[in-house]
Image 1 (spheres, helix red, strand yellow):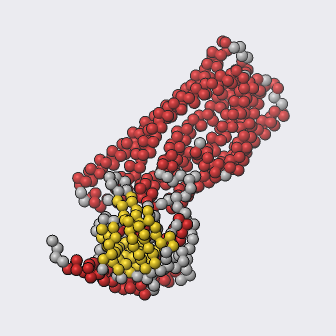
Image 2 (cartoon, helix red, strand yellow):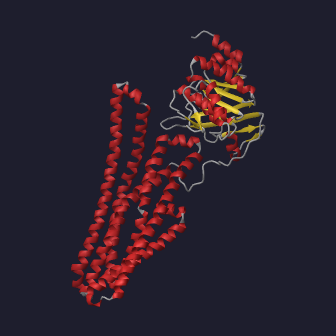
Image 3 (cartoon, one colour):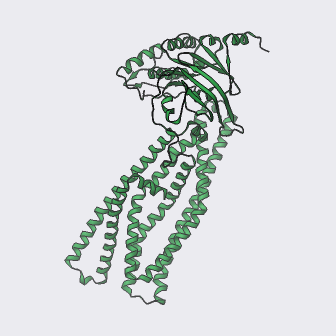
Length: 548
């Protein structure tokens, strides 16, 4: 039913119109069959009026069938678009931590595999609607021919449906298992793409990885095979019960209840005519099952389209500020596969407008988590964030994020400067390309970079260029200089950061470059999720101490 609900949400008006047109087509189809049967019974009774009626019914069937198919095809494409675009929007609206817990491989599987599966099911809906009407009208006509035969036929049909549902329930666990196995397979494919160099450099690792891929693929293949076997067996069983029903009606029924030959002939021909739409519907049922499972999968990920958005994305501008304060802020998270989670805080921290703050600490101390809290990508589990003494809320979160231009360690670089539409955008971008020594490898035309296929260090410079063009009050850099050569690292600390400070910007930089700590107004040290404010002279004394 979820597939049909998507169609109704897309446009219930088109559903009603297509249903009405399909009903006319179904009535006309059954009327055509009845007219042919009447002519077969009494060929001598054929008149010009009947010939005209025959032609008119053919035209009506043609026009209404095409009209219904076009309307429902349009509707199904609207629904598919709604699912695809809606799922992207749900991902954009979902809390970042929730997306990280899901994993990129599962998100990609839903955006590609699940949406495609649902689309296949929806593409079959136009034919389903018309076939349902034909079957309904055909059943009414069978009842007009012989009510008792019609009831017997419906009984056999219900028997076939029950047989199918029994097998479909057995197949459901294999359908679900196959879908979960596809997530695992996609995870292996992602590892292959991201780790191809390392796999090529280690023969044994490559061989073990190949075995893992084969094992994951085998699980998908076997689960899908068993599911398909059960579903196809259910379809064949349903067809067999239908044919058995026809045989009993033709050979056994007349022995117990007399029925005239013309009625029996008309009944048999009508049922044979109804076989085609019935088989089309039955063949569509496995696709329906896969689509239902895909919808359930999206729902389990917490990305269902009919749920409320995870975050308030309404933009409420935040006024200029002088002081950003954390009071007792904590945040806990657990990644997939981790036995124990990590808790940052409680944190008491103050950032003043216009200062340069370095955040330091060992690996796993919580620096990147702090950066996500500072920028509003994570929200405190307890405690509060204040701007000039005013607590932030869900309503101001989106506006608060717009205060920050951020370059994360694994920064994504888009090939187009989306959201930046200044008249002199290309000129300003060109100037920054020269400052960042990228003008020989990248150009900007119409707000689009000529290439983003650069080294990691160059990509970070390109991300910095985007941050410059955003021109927001606060700049946050997550180990930006780690991938730069010594010369440009010096440029970053001694020229670029002071320049941002002179422009009145607040700079927060996560760094391990202890030789440049003196460039900061303050250095904040993290140890096991706790903040320690460290004065520069204390840090310099630590650096001068001999290594044990």
